Length: 301
Image (cartoon, rainbow, N blue to C red; front, side, top):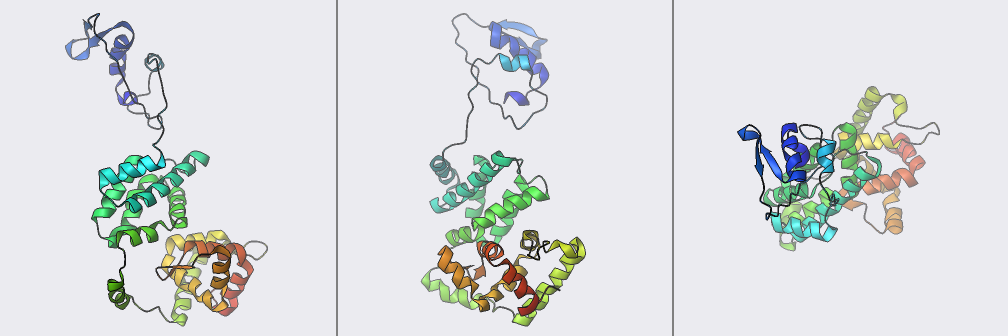
């Protein structure tokens, strides 16, 4: 990797690239010439997003005759690579590659994400989640993908939003641990019943009060009285379970039926409210949602 080598090594290679001889650093820059019959081809790689130890010298870079740009493999090729190197299921590789390409696209499109989701990271993630219990899936998503790619909190939020929008965790959990008919009754017995409505409202209201205390009273609504998306985004990042439980109370108003008719999708996944449904409520039932949060299941002043 030519932009990771030291300046003295670059200088030493200059002569080899242009004059068919090399000065050996280990032997006091002793000149060693190549035979006229020798056919030496030097190939170097360079990661433009990484400067390396020293800045790449212009004269050194200029000595390479051909400089092709190597792009990422096609989607199908990345899936094949992930399956072959990690030994994961094809459906798992497809899910991870799809998310990786979306994050990669976002990074290139508006530079809102600094690091690129590499093919190596795809393979590593597939390898880890395929060999660990699905109980650790959320931990692995956070520490192998989000914390690794996100340089700051804003970038981490952007990555998390992309993954949530694709139901990344829910889909992977389903593929890594498929629920058969034989096991469904056992699993059902292990699921804790939902908390009483009053407790859900009380719990969420305390979180809202903490939000208002931290960010200010005007940080949950716009000038026209509609709810801010920032409000839901904050809760999704900080208190996801509380938000899901509270939004599920909107079932009494029948919005989930309208959602299913218009979007052709269920508002629940594995018994929990989806991020997509919350976004749909925000966009299509904003004022109704504000009224719900003030009067029906009051958590706002």
